Image 1: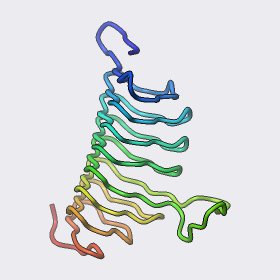
Image 2 (image 1 turned 180 degrees about the vertical axis):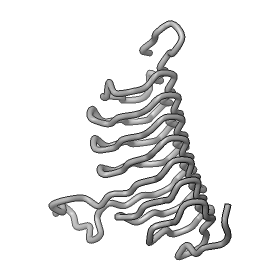
Image 3 (image 1 turned 90 degrees about the horizontal axis):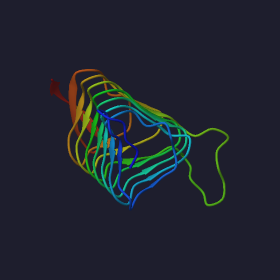
Image 4 (image 1 turned 90 degrees about the vertical axis):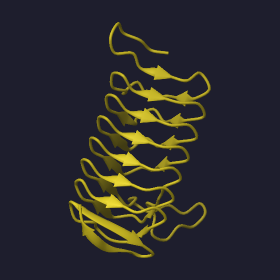
Length: 159
């Protein structure tokens, strides 16, 4: 555990955290893996059984629930909630041992909430304060302040 007087960072001893780029008061729980170049903001809660690759930036006050993998090219802004087992993709045509010249990106804007078991395809932006309903498949950008649900996700109402 890394600690200062008022702003302790908690890293569970059963996690593998290689980055030093972790903001004050963040908690990383057991069986999480965080690679060396990842950046995690202040007051985040990274739950168990998560994986965070190198080219990932996470803002402040972010909650990432169990079973979430964050791949290269992801940008998560402040005050975002990501529900358990949310799946992100960053390669439109995946093949074993064949990698694209550049991975697709996903940006989740401030205040967005993503329900459990959501799948989000690459090259998508989730707008500020938007909500994605549990089990949805997101195939395109989601505007700010809207609730989207379904497979594929469709506009439900303003939030």
